Structures are given as C-alpha cells and as structure tokens.
Length: 127
Image 1 (cartoon, rainbow, N blue to C red):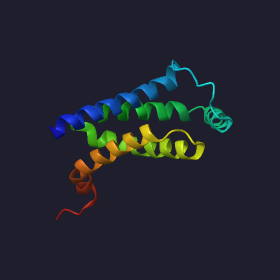
Image 2: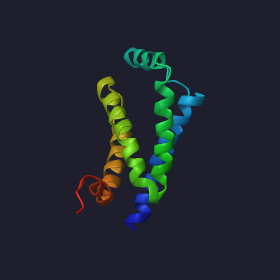
Image 3: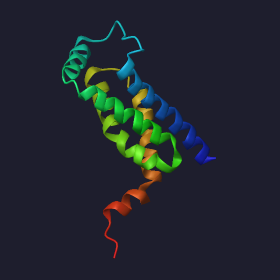
Image 4: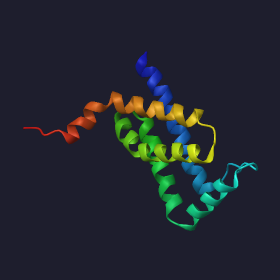
C-alpha cells in the first residue's frame, strides 16, 4: 500500500515539474495579474540570462520524468532537490503561498529517505 501511495504522489509531483518545465518553453499558462512587482522584476532578470530558463526547464522536465519512474526515482529526486530549494526560497521571500511547495518538498524528502541506501553507497568507502 505504501508503494502505491508513494507512486501516486511521485507521479503527481513529477507531472507538476514537467508541466512547469514545459511552460517555460511554450508559455501556455497565463501570468497572474496580481503578481507582485518584486516577482516580475526577478522573472525579467532571469530571462535576461538567456540560457538560465531553458536550463531550469530541462532539469524540471527530465527530473520530473525520472521522478515518476520507480527505477530512476532516486536520480530524479537528486535532480529536483536544488530546484525545490529555489522554489521554496522564492515563495518565502516573495510571500507566495507555501502549502503546495511544502507538500512537494515533503514528498521529495520521503523519496530521498526511501532511497538512502542508493545515496549512501556513493559516499561510503567499500573495501
């Protein structure tokens, strides 16, 4: 039962990351009209660096897809972790709602804890 719940949560989170990444390429989601000026300034500054948004979008799409597939979920979690930190920092500093990013962060931490053996094998010395 736990594996089914984790799969569903990872699929939903992965699809959210894929959607966010695709939106950076195709701009199909409307920008909210009540977006704070600080947020608009930050987005405009990020778009000035022409390679930054495509890089973030690519990592969101690839990380989200890997996060859905159980065999590659640990790798997807590693790819999505710095993006998740950025999302939470963005929401904290600009005063956006935190519930969805915090839920996604909890799911990400859950996956990292579930796959800790895979990560520990990378940093421990095997003799």
